[in-house]
Every structure is written in structure tokens, then in C-alpha cells.
Amino acid sequence: MTAPEAPSSPRLVGDESRHKETAPLWEESAVAPALLRGSVQTALRCLVLLAILAMVTTGLIRLRTVPPKAADPPVFRLDINQAGVQEWMLMPGIGPTMARRIIADRQSRGPFRSVEDLARVTGIGDKTIAQVRPYCRDR
Image (cartoon, rainbow, N blue to C red; front, side):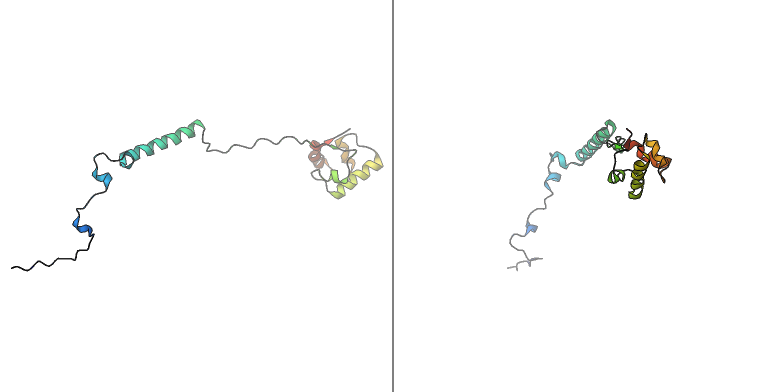
């Protein structure tokens, strides 16, 4: 009688070493799922790239910024012979002191005939007149 051979390593119930080594299903099958094949993945990548390029060239995707459209002309128009201090202070380049000077000049010397008449007020020059002209209306 011969003695039984000693196992080289102990076997446990459910030990996978008894089963044959299996490869993943997609490598083993002759008909692998299409999305798992490398050649199909490469083809899909190329198609996506071509689709993006087509959208860029046809303008569906804009890579450049669109310049802002020009501002509309001001809607508010100031009556230079009726405006009070608060209204004058809304004008560019006109603060509270200048607004009071304009009103004082208008009361002492009479109404302004045009926006250019504002030059008779001390401290108002061509630059200030050019700034307020788009917002003013004369009579």
C-alpha cells in the first residue's frame, strides 16, 4: 500500500484553481459585442470628431465671440429750461454745484436758447456741452 500523496497546497471548498482558466467573454467569443472591439471604438471616435468639425465649420458651434451691438441713443431728454437740480445731476459731468449754477444763471439771465448757451455758465465748456448734448433738448 502506498501512502497518499500530500497535496502541494490545501484545497478549499469553492477553490477556483480546480476550474479551468477562462478568458473574459469578449476575448473568447468569435462574435464579440461591437462596442467592445477596438476597431469599432476607433471608427466611432473618428465619426464624432468629423461631426464636431462639421458643426464648427457650418457655424452651429461658434468659436469666436460675437461683438456687442452698439448702444441705443438715450431716450431721456432734459428740457434745459425746466430741469431742476436733481435732473441736472443725472447728466454726465454735472454735479450738485454745477446744477445749482445752471439754474441760478437761467433765473438771472433768462432761458437758454440752445444747448450751446450753457457755455455762459461759469465752469461749463465745450467738453461738458458735448457730454450733455445727446441728453438735452432745447425749447
